[in-house]
Amino acid sequence: MSCWRLQKVLSLEVAVPLGAEDFERGSAMRKEGEFAQKTAKAVAESVPPGILAEIIVVDDGSKPSIASTFDKEEREKLGVRIVRHKFAKGLIQAKSAGARNATGDVIVFFDCHVGPQTGWHTELMKEISGNYRRIVVPSITNLNIDTWKQDSRGGGVNKCYLTWDADFKWFNSKDNYMPVLSGGLLGISRKWWNETGGYDSKMKSWGGENIDQSLRTWLCGGEIVAVPKAEVAHMWRTPDDPRTMSGYEVDTMASIVNRARAAKGWYGKFAGKLKEFPWYPYVGFDRLDVSEFKEVQQRLGCRPFSWFLWRFKSIYEHAGLVPEKTFKVRHAKSGLCLTYLGPTGTHQQGQDEVRLEPCKEGPREPEDGAMPTMPPNQNPQRWHLANRNSDGLCCSGLRALNTDQCLSSPMKSVPVQTHICEVSGRNDMMLKITDGTEQHLAPGQFASPSGFCLVKKGSYIQQGPCKAKGDSKARVVWEIFDEKEPAEYKMYKQALELKPELYVDDASSEITAQQSKSFVDGIASIGAKFCLKLPTCHFTINVYKLSKTNSAITLEHSNHR
Image (tube, rainbow, N blue to C red; front, side):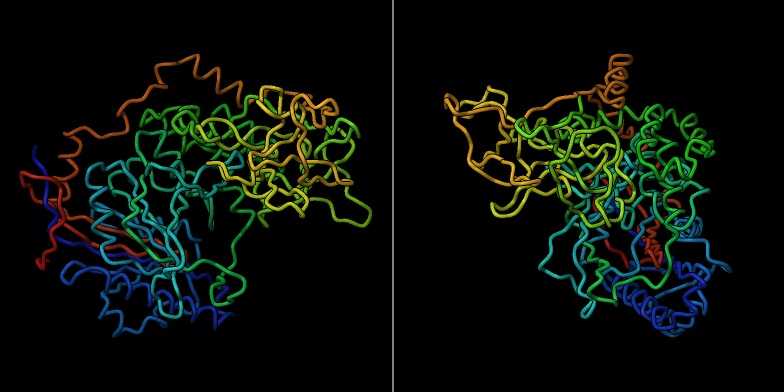
């Protein structure tokens, strides 16, 4: 079998979206500029001599120019060239500018506060060279900003899944495929970037582009793969360290519109689900022009959104994200219902309370003197099964409808709360209402495999003893009622029945040998380029020309320019 040897490195591009408001925040500006320089230096030092050709910084209208914080002599030493926007256009358009300036064949986006580890480029290129429609994502570890070294205390993450509110959540799995990328760190061939149309031109500021890019990749014939051995240390935003906080404003409303555009553009018939999240009707998602998405779908013959749900059925079927039914949970003796006190959608604090309250339809009334939940939860008493069980199937816990929150009971003395769902199943979230099929437990109990059951304690619930099957004093404590089939499950089931030929395991996401040869030949004649995105910077690295050998695809460092 013929294959290729990578020989010549390309250029590295860095996009730095520092807006005009930073002129009034001199210290923030200097901080971001310092981080960008450290990132550029870290990238340059992580690639062997003779490989790195150039670093391009995209300055997104910052005042003063990022050039004033990048010393000219230092830029020349690192091989930095600056591309500047006269006015701030936001992160998404800055990333797009970095891609437009790339002249090679592979684009890699990094955040501007990262420290790539030795060998990262080798591992990414090994993966992407085999399939030009493959987006690759490195393992994102923790960066110590004092030493700019990888913090060994933290493990790497890179996999995300899509929630119905067009947001994403981190998760772990046994394989390297992921439904959604977080957006900050990735590699993509320039050919695939151009074929899929890059980022939606109507998206502004920040956020939502990762949802768009993930769905247009999976639905239009590509794939997204984690590369665990390619480690890139990343600075996370933490309020307890002001140095990590951004020096620029994020337009929250623009982010909501961006996510609405991605969801309306790719959800198809499932886009009606957005009506259940109040911020989307507020921004008029149903009036958004998504003709750009339609053009890509028609040109590339993209699959329907139901295929994405099926492709990742380990999450959407087996972890309950497309539930067969939703229901209410009632305490039999008091007649009160299990009620989630948090908001719809993503919970900014990651956890909330549950109470027993009178059963009703619609949002709960705020307590005297309390602020109403924002955004208001329209179905705080409706739940569904969630999270995989020990067999990898559905389900081991309960999730509040249209949220990222699952019922959790980690400690005996603490009332039951909700926390961000762990779709793979986690011990404190393994809770089910027994139905009589269990060997030792009486029916109608809220049981955990850890040996306790949930009991009423005033208006709260907490851990207590279980009733054994056959106990003459055992009574039904909890009951499920008011079951409903959600619209998304009905549409998903109908889609699988209507065109079963679409939902079969195949190698359709793999490129053909001829396509691979065409891509490799293109790199051999032009050269490949990495572009690394930074929320404040974009890096692009010119890397590798390919030459043909008669063994496997390998990377060969060369001093030839």
